[in-house]
Image: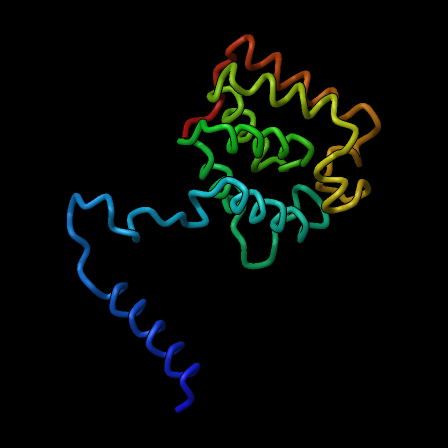
Length: 173
């Protein structure tokens, strides 16, 4: 075996042993306890949501083999977090049309986050670029821009108004 191959095999084996070794309860220095998984990383959750939107031919068309709740489950991954990255990702998603299944839950998430959402939404409203139009194309049915030139602004103003009025959610989750 060549030295480089042996070194690579040794490193891979040491990672495997570390992964299989028991975790010490309460040991915050354990590298596995500090790993970021995709469902705890707002930008990666956003990628999953956007890919879901990109596969649809209409905001309310269900994907084959996917339940209508799929988009709701993805959006709910943002529920517990209120860090700046999550706030910005949620504001970016305001340019997408989550359809009937996701619209109410998205609105509830924005309202529940409260006033911290307002600056991010205002920034998104004044931006010259549109996240959905850049990613999927302005004519894609999952983009608010496909509903008309003022649709994005109207949606963001509606979200900001709901946050300011602290409108209660009509659904429970």
